[in-house]
Length: 125
Image 1 (tube, rainbow, N blue to C red):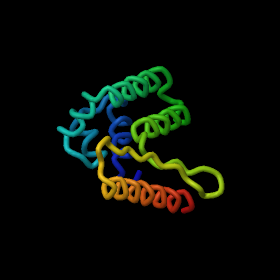
Image 2 (cartoon, rainbow, N blue to C red):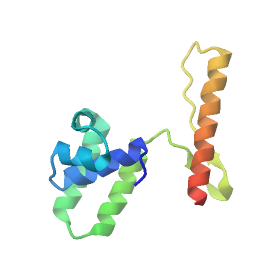
Image 3 (cartoon, one colour):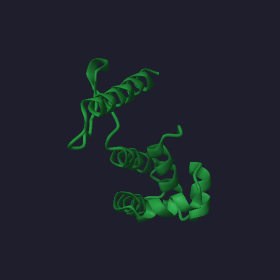
Image 4 (spheres, rainbow, N blue to C red):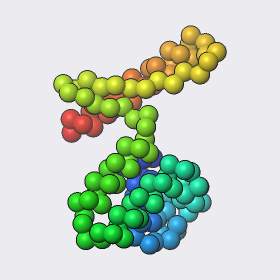
């Protein structure tokens, strides 16, 4: 997988669900063991880990189901990722805190559009 934060988390999920240690999962994901430990304390990551682990324990030979579940986990672990829809168009979420200046709003919007354009390029390749 590529080195996006969500992909790193999914890599760690796979290793942890398979019974590997934080250190082994961190090595596979390209992060430190303390990062994996911090992820495990996050409610969303912990829930995804429990779901993947349950599936892995229930059907360890069903690679298709495990890969599908990991893809769902990736979507949940990257909720602000741009969504590419039909025709190469995309949707992005822009979180603008209350009281932001016009310049801050413009910068946040530009960054979201740039993320969307990268997602479209990745989808095309």
